[in-house]
Image (cartoon, rainbow, N blue to C red; front, side, top):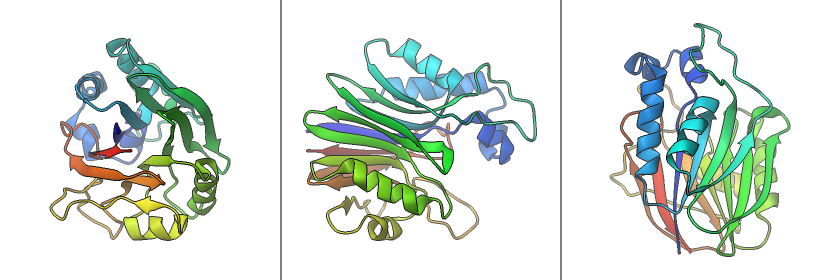
Length: 233
């Protein structure tokens, strides 16, 4: 049994570039980073996958969690400010797995057609855990294929921001993979006030591994995504 969580914590440059309400809610990014770090540090899960982690956020997490193992994908693309100057000391962006207990790094790779998205895999208790962030446009088709290939035929859990709803994700992965469902009264993983895109785009996908206790939690309102947690194995 492994307790897991996934959360897109929102890179500040993306928030500023897309004029996110988070940029208005948190005018001082250092304060938001501290809130995100405190929320992650308080989580009980053994494995936490984080997307859109800035260099400043990563440094804060490492300082707060010196007893955890950090597996990190450093994206080759560094987000560039388009609207306002960035206040980050380190604008780099990362995909992160934070693990309590033994783990074995397997692979980390950006998606070739989108160097700001990718996958990161580690083996934990005989299960391949893959954290991912998938593109929000047609480039994702090849990314789904690559994720399935990395998952292979053994027990695997994929978690992260897939940028599509559950039905589209199930169609992309096909037979052999299970997309965990959310409780009927669940809050969205990515709340929206406009547009037709799904509000449930952060998922737990399994192959040959049982999953239970899937839930979405509002984590301090510090990101435009909510946190998803589950128990696998």
